[in-house]
Image (cartoon, rainbow over all chains, first blue to last red; front, side, top):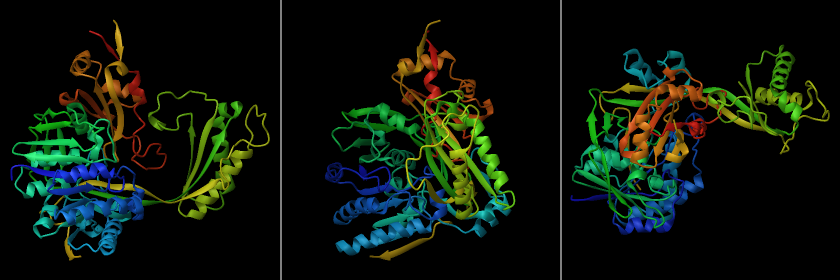
Length: 451
Length: 107
């Protein structure tokens, strides 16, 4: 095949895209549509709770359009990191939506589901054999952290996706997957080199973010040929420029010259970016270097309790000046009041206007703003205790005294009634490690269903 | 020595998670000339980032020049793992402000 084209509709399935851009993309007769549906950016909650950070209605809207187009044009559709985190409940949400749309629109196709959630036993066996290593500034995995992990996913590479296409699937829904894999898999399967294919996938996976002006909710088209690939936006208001595309290569990665991935590394030190048309950029020189041992990245989370928060504000200059002391008073009162109850909790305060955004990294620590946004947060082992601690901290902070106090009616302005909000379950990352595997398919069972 | 403000020679200055354990800081210069000025200035060392963020130098785990994008990129260890108790910025996208104060000697 001389040139192969892949259409990326949006940065994350559910983030949306203009229909006109998508139609422009389809006019260019893509050989595949692929979309990434996940990220760890939204934090540990979604993997732990089995909930998607993308909204069901928004995902359905995107899926309806791309599924219908793929089936009508008889081209494959690949979805990676389904449901946001790529665990079983996430995969079920998105495959459920696909079945629902197929039923509603009378579509028929061969569906591949690739699972990516793995049991603790499998990880424990690998840990005992010394096959688990930390990824970056992460402590070595302990048995305790593993035992407490409530959900673990492995990040699949290209191979299981190629396997699904080989098995005749037209629609592939994958659990947690290395973001570029869904774009690179159909290209590698047709014999294109993995270096340019993966690098192209790395750019396409964020939709039009690599264009200027950038957007996470617009389409991008990729073309691959012998020794090169090209990207172009499909919305006339955007352009791909050498700077926008090269800059995107930096995005959310530590080292843009060596990008580690399942089974190897993408080396970009000889990558060249050139403008080949008004809004099109060509990239050459991207190289894939296979690793000695095939490793898969694992992501796991453990439960940390339940959260309740209160949102409030303060406009009193004396209180704002004394805010650190107010915090000490409230914390001490909570400790003393519930000393007999034996509660185990975390009580924290954020002050917007004063070190609320940067926390430990904030260099400007001594500002005195004219007003403060306040978030009181309690995390405890049950929702009930979190409610108790947060409510107590709120009422104490509302009426406590501090040096020089003039406004004696109340210290806080609440924008809402009720003032306290249940945040539900809280999770923490417990696993972010590499696991050595015997083959790239080992952790990712394939299921084929005729729809 | 005359100095230029980073905001006059760069058009992208941003922070972002690179996974839940790292925070990566990008400065993309307006053109090759400004990028060369910056890289030769000797300003962009791990110490600079350690000073700006009040962290020890060993927490600055990567410092890379990416010529193709006219960019200098540093990566630091997140002070808290994303979403851990005390977290203030789960995505890490609002940690760039200290970079805005950087100045580079003109020649």
